[in-house]
Length: 106
Image 1 (cartoon, helix red, strand yellow):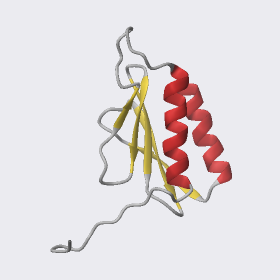
Image 2 (cartoon, helix red, strand yellow; image 1 turned 180 degrees about the vertical axis):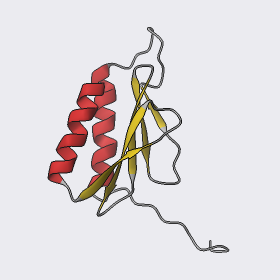
Image 3 (cartoon, rainbow, N blue to C red; image 1 turned 90 degrees about the vertical axis):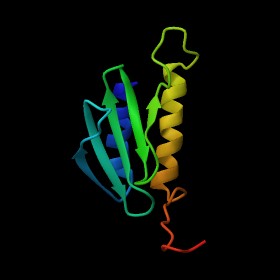
Image 4 (tube, helix red, strand yellow; image 1 turned 30 degrees about the horizontal axis):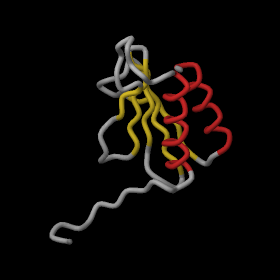
């Protein structure tokens, strides 16, 4: 799962217009921040579980992958990798954006 995430980051850097930088995340041992020209910023980190933490956007909370670190968990590594690919694709293709309404709006 971690190796697949590393390959995904390398692939994204080649295919999309984005800036990559080392990042810090409280849940991650190491992380990278990806800021695409279109779409929301993304932080992808490696946890001690072993697993991944994915934070898409500035205002959304982090998503821990897998959701459960127990042996009885129903999530497979393929499930986790598929979810990471789906979320990242939504960000880098501009399908996920953020909007912070003006104070008093709405």
